[in-house]
Structures are given as structure tokens and as C-alpha cells.
Amino acid sequence: MKYASIKKENLNKWLEYLKKKARLYAPRKKENLFVFRPVKDVSEVCLKYVPTILPPKKYYFPQKEKLLKFSIEPFKTAKAISEFEDFILFGVHTCDIAGIQCMDVVFRDGPEDPNYLNRKDKMTIIGIECLEYCDRFANCVSMANHVPRGGYDLMLVDIGEKFSIHINSEKGERLVKGLSYIKETGEAEMSALERVREAKKNVFKEEFSAPLNKVNQAFSQGFASKV
Image (cartoon, rainbow, N blue to C red; front, side):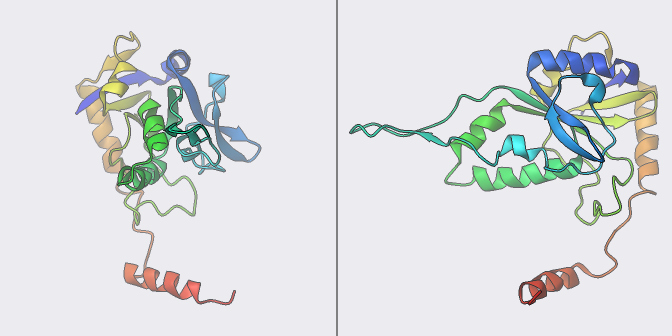
């Protein structure tokens, strides 16, 4: 595993850099809620937020899009739309990343969805690991999403005055390499990361008190409900 670190005071500088590399989307506050939006002012980016109104997958799998270009002329073949721009999803919770991974399974299995895969090639995910529950409705441990399980290019962890950055892909490495304010992780940062992870074990607990088979039964019974 490769790790780097960045001082919190340099985070906005990095965000400005990311804006120049690709279209950047990140969470920001909207009244009493939070939304993922294109980043115009990096000072508006929020890394402590409750689940957004719509999950970040809206950029990964939009609600509305052109799927095919075709002609009514004979012998013309329909083609998938492939003109997608590079974009970065910044500050994505591990639960949202897990949801995107589920979509990968669906759209990679035959028949593959070329539009989905083309957009995926253009996307970079920079996650943020939650160190506490984001709201009282979260079921992180029960869904095994309270820790990162892949599906991202970079993962940030708050270790005090700095963020630890786990580099999980070549694409992610290109976004931190050669920047003077992002340093290779030393022993002090790795020790801080271990302490944070150890403390996290006392925060996240199994949320369901009933056996999981009882939960499945409740879902099944719900379909038969008249309400």
C-alpha cells in the first residue's frame, strides 16, 4: 500500500489543483442539507456531512442521458455516446463508494453497458473515511461499509493536523505526485493513522440487534402489507 499526507491548511490548494485537472464535484451545504455540486469556490467544500440529497452516483449513472446515436439510413450502425469529460468525485463516503461498486457488478456483466463503462474510465473517486456516524440513521457496520473496501483511487483519513491519503490506483497517484505540499507518509503519520483506526473500533458498533434473517423476513412481509 502507498500512503501520502497533506496538511489541512493545504487542502484548498490541492482542490484548486484538482479543478485544473478535471471537472470537480464535491459535497457542499444547501440550507440544512448537503449536495454534490461542481466546485466553483473550494472554500464551500464540506468533508463533514450527512448523506446528500442525491448520492454522488448521479454523476456516474445520471437520471437522464443520451444513450445512442443512430441513423435511419440503411446499413448504418448505432453507436454508444462516448464523448464524456474527465471528472473527479471528491469527499465520497465509503458507503456511497460501496454502492457504486454494486453498480459496477451489474453493468460489467454481459451485456456490458458501454456508456456506463466509458464514463467510468473518465471518473476518479477521492473518498473520505468516516471516523464517526454521519447521522443517527446510519447502518455502517451492518452493511460492512464503515471501512474502505476498494472502489476508489484515493482515500482521505483525518489524522489530526493532516489527512492521510491512501493511494489505490495509478490514476490517483498522478493527482498527488510531484506536489510539494503532499508528502510521502512517515512513521509519525502511520502511527497517527493506526491510533485513529483503533479509536474508530470503539465508535462503530453492530446496529441491528436482531438476527439478519429476521431483517430479511421483515422485508418480505412488507411486500404483503396493505399499507
